[in-house]
Image (tube, rainbow, N blue to C red; front, side):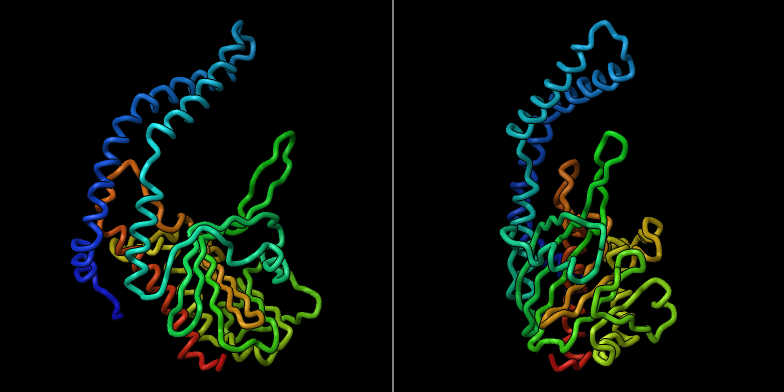
Amino acid sequence: MKNLTREEFSQIYENQFLPILTPLEQKRKIDKKKSKPFEILCVIFGLSIIITSFLPNTPFPEIRIVSVILLIITIFIAGNVCPGIRDDVKKEVITKILSLFGQFYLTTDKYPITAKTIKEMGLFPSFTDIYCDDVIEGIHKDLNLTISETHLFHSEQIGKHAHIFDDFHGLLLKIQMHKKFTGKTIVGVNHNIRKLKGFEQVNLEDIEFAKNLKVFSTDQIEARYILTTAFMQRLFELGEFFANNGDAVSNKSNYTAFSQEDLLVSAAFIDGNVYLFVPTKEDFFEISESESILNVDKYYDVYCQIQHILSIVEYMKFDMKLGL
């Protein structure tokens, strides 16, 4: 299918998306009205907890305990009375958008990668836990592709409390090639990669990329064949696009929220698979229930994000001529 313009996508939106979204928007408005009393109660109980926390000598310490209990109960009841439409919109709309590209489907039942596999790459050495959401699977240009919103994190004890730290938050792309690589090649951001036994460092041709990236491989010749300047530029453009939140319509730059290293995509070429770790600051296709869901630009942005990802698959299939 050809790439759709904003106007062409809008026509599809009118015919296929609105009949699904309109009743969900009505439900969102009803839920919003129902949730108002619960929101007020949460504010009251929250303020009570904060105030009593700063008054350790208050004659009524039980107030804080009661406020915590009431806050939990209020949140639980609100969740049942107003379950929200997030999952419904995500399921219906992403499925519709994916259908524009062919054989793709959305699942939350399995992870495309394990923590052990990432550890064996030497990437994100501090992380201990992995969480994947919104897994998309399908076939594009005869290559199997998996797209997963992935979160890598670890906890650290600071004083008496454990704190959670992000090691990676973004999209994981897994592209299955037709043949296996002869060696293993890993591309990582300077502070997010460590050299593993049996690997050698590969010096990149482009000095600019070498400033923030390190490459380790078990096959120097193959690594240099894969990591051309053109391919590294493609990786940079992919990271740059998602640093802009994949905003194809407003094109408002979000680069100020990123450091130079945050724009960079990590990659691994192992066996017959290519793994790309694309950092993002926002979750993929998150729905705000505080505003109308009938905004065509939101869905066109998602369409463009998927389209941008698929362009990488096409590049690896046709332009790189890997024969894999």
